[in-house]
Length: 414
Image (tube, rainbow, N blue to C red; front, side, top):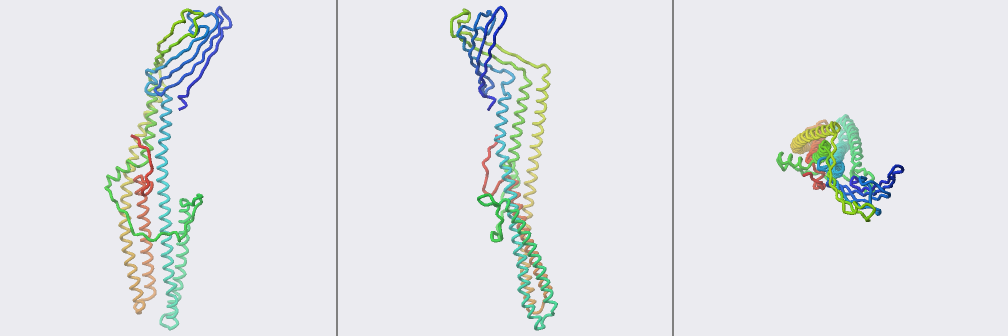
């Protein structure tokens, strides 16, 4: 708004030599208007004797002046002042979708880190359960070897298995610690210090899931309406259109209408200045080549065209992201069903193998195999749940949501 600041100016001059010797002074205040016009007012005074054709002569007490300058061509629709104000407004308004975009990216990254931390915690529990099974079996195997029901190599093999599974537990715990540190970038205390969440913060296992409750065309339309990147690009396009309008304005000739009124404050010494004065005139300026203005206009037109192409490409990219995210989510839901069923079957096989071992119809190797299969099935289920949660996060981000039930207030380009 600084371009519309009120301007105060003055001018003083003296004729030091010559037939006419006089001093003239004037002070003016000018106020540019939002319409492109400007009004001004001021005071003029001169002393000495000046010829009739000298415009700056005044009566002894001077004269007050009030005028208006009205652009008729260049500066009528827009000018540098109004364009600057509009672009500043666009800059402020354009920050809102930029903040929304950053918020979506932040929530997406934080959600991905959270679900990765949760999955790592589930895998620690699976590894520890495998270790517990092997350790609980060790005492019974030792009694079997002492009573010569089992060969001693069976005890050695189970001890090897315990050692191996301890390694798995250590690896799983290290992966969980790394995931907790990654989550701490987003999970903070009231004093903004990172919180490294331990296993005690792990939520209970969940079975709920969210499917696709709307058609792809509806989701695409919603994304094209909600995505802040498109809104931000619309503001950039508005700024480019403002530059183009200003460039088109600069190509026009300058034709200004001037209207001025003046009134003397005393009666002498000039009789012709006693009456109220009123002046109407015009001023025309036209650079012949106008190369600079035409060059700026061409640049502005190309920028508008570039942004329109960018907008079309962004819309196509958003459509692809929505379709890809929907496909990933549907696939993740299918894997989730299959892996949960796989865990149920693997658990049944472990129970059956343990009963067979107690009846002497199986051996330790087969039990170990069934337990490993169960662990693999559980890890697959954890990874499937992780894939589902992350796919859901990606889908919501593709729709332009910053979080479940949390819609930021954003301005809308109309």
